[in-house]
Image (cartoon, rainbow, N blue to C red; front, side, top):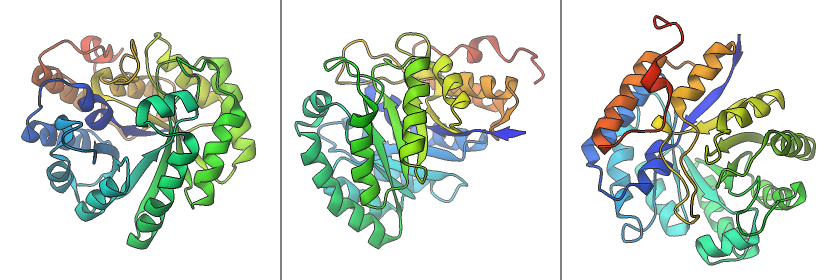
Length: 298
């Protein structure tokens, strides 16, 4: 049976959007539930300024509670200070992001792409010295709400810079749900040819309702790594109308029904999604958590 690797990003990409503080113990409960359901890759938090994102001010406590429980833990870091804090916790992987869109990068972090890439260099050196892994994320890889279509060359120049720093794993982010199957197939083919040594991961948002269709296009393009969020939570805090991520339970269901192994127990994962819905206090957009698997005993 073929295998897909799913990284759960809801604890970072989803939780950062929540206006009401989620108790640390609840975050840890959800994280442990994800591991218990078979998730082996979790983006647990982000080491951003607690003043900027109070929701993630407990990043160190969350990582400490989930470490050594059987999952590879990653954390988003915006700068050297965040990287230093992340390395102190013993997180397995650090993630830095530079947008493929100049306009988005400036609106997001008030820096040009070139300035952002220069800031990554000392972080890459520190991560290598610490014996950890640095991963890259490239937001707006499939299109930008302000700049429009993004070419493969624009994405490639960011990946090329990361690759020169020793990065060997890159996530292509569909930040505002602008990906379509033709764009996905074309970009993945172009990048696979340019960077055969780079492990590509696809991160889709379901803004326009075709998140899983884009996953299917990615699978057809030979991509085996995907990011998704429990219950379909999340979005982009800097772009109006950017709704949640592809839902992890829905993705796991699609994978199972398509003959792909993920290592995830779907019933257990649905239980975690329902617990998250209860904790957040509103209905989540995930579908499989409501209807269950096609064959309920599956």
